[in-house]
Every structure is written in C-alpha cells, then in structure tokens.
Length: 316
Image (cartoon, rainbow, N blue to C red):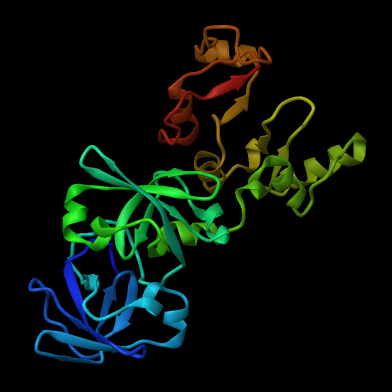
C-alpha cells in the first residue's frame, strides 16, 4: 500500500524491456529482495539489490498497461516505498496498480504552479470527480477540473521539485491510478437503488393494501411484535414505521433511533396530556398541521431512563 508521497527521484540504470534496474535516491530506505517499491505509479517486486541499484522483472502485462513500454536508461522516475505500521497516512491510498495511461494535452504556468490537462481513456472519465485524489505517475494530486474529455491537476512548486511532474510536456504520457476508497465505493450497487419506491417495492410483503384484508394484515403483523412501514406516494415523500406500543421492546427503540429518520412519536389522548402537564408544541405543527405536544420527561417516565434525547411528539 502506498500514499503517493514520493520519497525521492530514482534514475533508470538499465532496461531491456524485461528487466529494469533503478538507481535509488540518496534518501532511500533500506530495501531487500522480495519487498515492494512503487516506480512512477507501478508496483514492482524487488528481485535483487546491489550498490544502491535494485532490479525487478517487468512483465509484458505491465508494459502493455503502463508507460513502461517507453522507459529508457537515464530517465528519472518517482520512487515510493510501501507503508509500514506507524507511518503517517499522508496523500491518499494507492496500490501501484495502473488503471489507465493518460496523455498530456496541455501544461500552463499558473501562479508558480503548473496546471496540467490530461486526456484519459474514455472508459475512465465517468469515474473521475473534481476535488477527488488521483495518482499521476505515482504522485498524489487532486483533480481540479473535469471536462468532457479531459481533467486537470494543479502541481505545486514542492511537488514539481520532488517528482517528475515538473517535467510534464504536451504529448507525454502518464500512469493514472484512481483513489482506492473511491474505487471500492464505485463497486457497490448504485445509489439509485436506495430511492424510496425501490426500497419499498423490494420488501418481502410490500404492495398496495386496502380494505378489511389490508388492515387485518397490518394488525396481525403488529400484534406479533413486528412493524409496518406505511407510505402513500400521493400524500408525501416520507413514510412512517409503526410498532404496537404493547409489544414494543428495547430493540425496536434502538431501531427507531438509529435506522429511521425523524422523531419517535406516540399517539395520546388530549386529556392524558393535560393530566401529565404536557403542553402543545408552539406553532401550527407540520405541513399537515398535526397537533403535537412534547416533553423530554415523557421519555424518561416511559422507559425508566431517558433513552430518547429529543422531544417526544404525541400526535393528537
């Protein structure tokens, strides 16, 4: 695992297309055979080390999917060593697995910085988000802008001095790797599946219910200690999760407080509220003008301990 914070510039000592030797920077930490090192955004396994130079075998797959197909002796490369326990987590999480090769479309001077416009393959564009991190030749930078066919990154003076990004020129190519966290999130089901109609329709016993049969189905579930979610798409864009008070258990309260948005509410007769000294909530109520009353002490009285740390509305 890497962070995209370059530890120094290495120099390609030799490369015959299959075996790469890189002269390590003076600031390099001790490395040994079998360990990992990231070279210009490509994770390599050290095969041997001698005299400040390490060697690694480069597979045909690596040459095909990175800029290593044009690597040559004397070329500077960004070098980073893997994270170890206790290291500061700077930059962003990267693995050294190249997602795509981008082409430098333009480089502009901008207040002492460089703004590089990079044109990635079309398949990568939907995954790029402005202000998200990306590794360019192994260097952690931030996507500044994203246009129809390209994106830009701003290269700070310190980054220019410490990496090869200060030498970018139009027509050049760079290795690109997406942020690890963003890539993992992108693999999850699309958020569109979380809209209310989709969720409701996916429930085991979902559907439109009406009449005596529908009421009986809901009452049976409540009497068994279960809950019913009621939602009328023609009335409002929110639903109500209902439990029977006589069957309510601590687990149900935990569910209401942690998984359901809004305030837990209980229906209560007006005379009972008057006897308890619980006055109405000021104002006209919600958009349906529901008459509500609230008092934090009701939660403590009801449950023995103040589990509900919010006003408890009692719908009249």
